[in-house]
Image 1: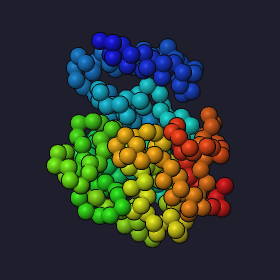
Image 2: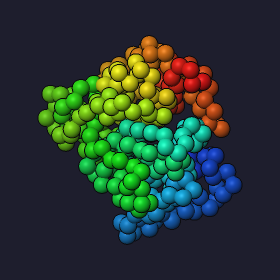
Image 3: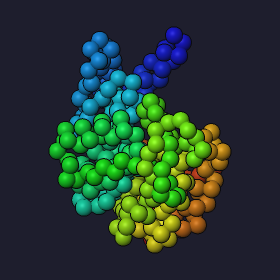
Image 4: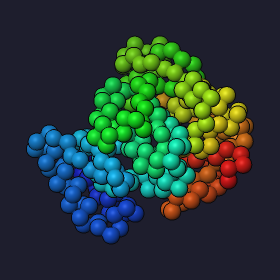
Length: 279
């Protein structure tokens, strides 16, 4: 009971303080409450806007999609940054796309999108959201994980946005295909790549040595929390060193989405890495 109450307080605080809701906080709270009640009574998902023109399905107990219903767009500074960075025809790679929040956001900016997601349930929801907005020609789905080398690894299941890869000797979980980012990109240039893979971001970029060396990735968004240490036993320092070694500048978006130099030590909000010459 205490945990449920604390979760409810966090949701209310998120909705009330979110920049997207500053003009309609009460209406946003009422909408969230109605969703919770209706979903618990009927089990049915709800439709919610993402951006100005797209929509997505939101199911109860799916954290990533629920955030979109609570605030559009949910990750305000980061998504404002991409709104300014992306344009028609740009390539955006959404690594760890889940139900497609960032993929739909990038598609609205006119970008062509490669959505990378290994979890079968999330892929099903992702495809439904793509079809809902008739974006099959703009968003390509790759059902795989990305790591340093191609092959197969096991993935946790039933954890929504916190599913993650397991060590090679692990026998539990779902067996998924693994590719490399270099293979996925080929000779293309990516205007943007968002990587949210529960602490395995360095593993993904270890498979992008060629693209990083040739500076064919303009901007990266990377989750920067303690998951890398909890799950893989390393801090974010090796990832920061890898990016700096290729000349990338480390920044974070302010409340208007403008990228500012930042201290990458420790943990914090998602970090952006910008290739040399692009600042």
